[in-house]
Structures are given as structure tokens and as C-alpha cells.
Image 1 (tube, one colour):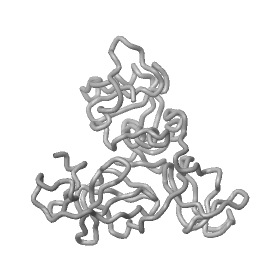
Image 2 (tube, rainbow, N blue to C red):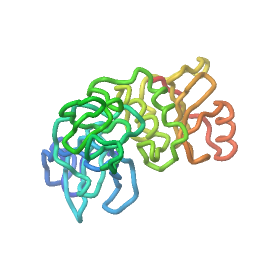
Image 3 (cartoon, rainbow, N blue to C red):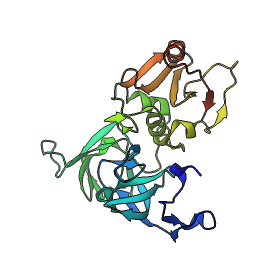
Length: 271
């Protein structure tokens, strides 16, 4: 079983795994991510696998050494995060639709922000007054929000708003994003399902035959890397080569990656 998608901490597991693992079983405890971003770790204090976003729904399966083992509702990804990153479960009504915004303590743009919020963060809007949306934690510019269930029409247009964002391994925001994080953020903003890592994303949609031209929105894969097609001959990707999100000529990228890393294209998908 892929540990990233298996709700089993090594000692506790969700009841869906009964008969498959030896564990103490639980239905889990619902919670949501409280800070702007929270690292999802392979082990308590270990390496970062992915990053969860404010308001992401999770199921808490186990707790140990100040960490909680959780499964994220948006993509079933499992891992450990600091217990302090957990907030209570509760209703959400809106998502952040801009690359980033700020949560303010009052309806005053000169007030020191409580924290930043990033694309696809979930919040509960209690009321709207002028340009300000009130949430239980503070105020947000309402133009940076979209109602829950309202999505962007074009995932590539979403990805284009993240151009020049710094590359960050396992990142899922404009403050730092990796190749699969860029794809997931963009597809989720368009209301489309998308797993967290590039090898999982190779299951999306249908294969694009090699003799068929690419379309905007197609995905191209190398081992350990994925890019979005912005046009038939142009890709958009978060790359460690430049340590940022860039647009690049498709053939230039194919040639460079083959020459520098010995990696050919391994899949072409249309989600």
C-alpha cells in the first residue's frame, strides 16, 4: 500500500482498513487546518511530503509527540503535522480565489494583518460590508473570495497567476510551490479532482497520443516532474532549474531535461 494514501499511522488506522492491517481502529476526528500553511510530514519531525492550506479538512487518526497523523479530505493524502496546526471542524462558505490575500483584525487595510491566506484556502464568511468580508477570525477583501462551489473556468489561467512564484519542494502556495503543487492548485481552483504528487497525477484524464498535438491544459510528465501546457508549444511549470514558476518553450524543456538529467517524456495526459 502507498503510505501517502494509507490512513495508517503504524499503530492506529481508519476503520476502512479493517482486515488489511494490524492496528487499533478509529473513525477519526474531523478538524481543519488553522494556520495559513501547514507542512504534511512523512514522520513526526521528518521530511515534508506536501503542504496543507488554511481551512483544509482533515481526519485526525493518531497523535504522538506533539504531532497528529491525518488524512486530507481534498486528495486523501496522509501524513503527520504539528498538533498546533489543527483547528476545530466547522462550516466553510468561501475559498480564496486570488494567489494570496490577507486576514485583518478590523476593517482597516492599515492594520497589521493577522496572517496571509493563499489560493484555495477555505473560510466561513459571516457577513459582507462594502469591500470587507467578515469571518470568525477577521476580515478579508471580498474581491479575493469566491463562494464555495464556484470555480475558475480555466486551470491554466489560474496557474498563470502564479508565474514567478519561488520553487519550494512540496509547496502548495504562491509563497512556494513545486511542480505537482502548481498542477493541483490550478485544477482544484477549477473544481477538478487532482492528487498531490506527480506520479499520482499520471492517472488523471486520458492519454494524449504522440501523434496528436497538445492542447492548452494538457499535462506532460517526466519521472518526478509535471508541467501544464499553456499552448501547444509552451509549458508552464514550477522547476528547480530556475527555482521559480516559468513559461518555457516545450521543445527547449524536453531537450534540456533529456541532456541534463537523462529523462525522457514518459506520459502525456488530458485531464
